[in-house]
Length: 117
Picture 1: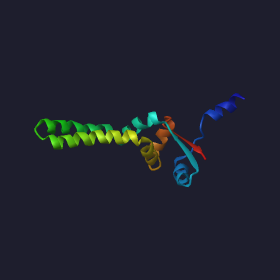
Picture 2: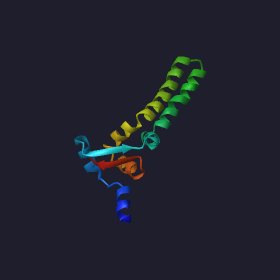
Picture 3: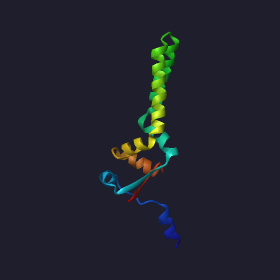
């Protein structure tokens, strides 16, 4: 009886190739943890360093006398971070269906759970 409840608590492992081929046909149900998805996607896409690379020079440009170009760079950096955070689940599913290492890490660390439909 104890082993039955243990097997119900853990999800079955589904290989990447099977996931990639079966996802468009609706063979799997994907559950994404929203709290873990945003930091995971930001890390995998390097969104934070890229946003800082836009915001930092944008501030410097704005302070050096060019407020419009500097403001646009700052806004682009903020918009990048906001977009990644808001659409993290969709971006994660896109990355996981195309990159095996993303799929493995996301399922291993509880960011995404894949179940048979």
